[in-house]
Amino acid sequence: QVQLVESGGGLVQPGGSLRLSCAASRSTLGINTMAWYRQAPGNERELVAGITSGGRTNYADSVKGRFAISRDNAKNTVYLQMNSLKPEDTAVYYCYAVRFGSRQYDYWGQGTQVTVSS
Image (cartoon, rainbow, N blue to C red; front, side, top):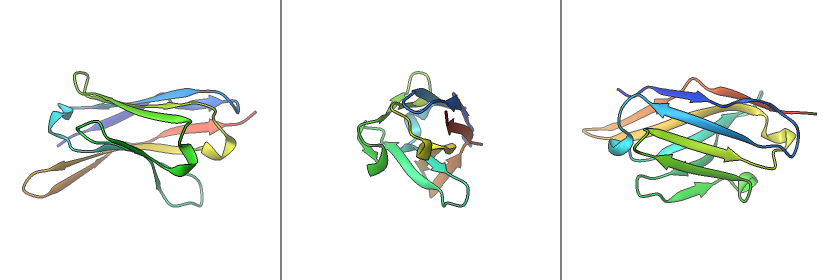
């Protein structure tokens, strides 16, 4: 079992920056992909960015060039650096991890609110 705890959300003005952190309760070395999803009111949860155990990353088109995902296996933590934030980035951001063993194991954090508003 892996528990994921997000932090770093808050209120920021348009054009500002935030860094989200997701700490895992156990080593992330056994975890394949870690990712950030977000869900705005009335919308479905969507993938924002993902990173594999080998460091390969992918991003939603809407955040390319503004967000950066990184992973520190020594600290069991994944980060999401968000720059040039826009009001449409407002959402609850969720950390996600997947581990493959006898089957696929999916883990979710509780979410952290990001609000971009002047």
